[in-house]
Length: 167
Image (cartoon, rainbow, N blue to C red):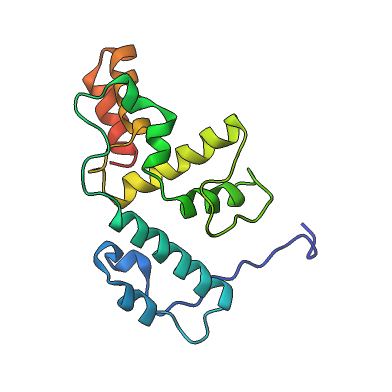
């Protein structure tokens, strides 16, 4: 490998080690206070963006997104799109190159092709489920569990996959 092909990856300068703290209970001021003065503007902006998404998810309805048992209507893309904050959807769409245009802050979700919309919603549903520690059921998570159980007729397979995923 030549020296020209080596790329130095620099870890953002933060005054806390995320692996040593339970950041799920950290307050927003605590997180903002933990940012060093040496932290780059880009890193600071990304932290603020993440905190904005977290606040939007915190302020979403505390009602369950899906009724139990779920119906076919609960497993729709529209239902999945309703549980994802618009800003997060647009951010992920731009980040994974599903859209090259910069979204208008007052706009709804960016118009995407069907395939890109599906991929973006998939990632966003994972983030929503992770944020709620698995308490907020998403159409993706429920459909995956039900499909595995139906196809394998094994609770154990569903349990193993569930333990490896977001729950």
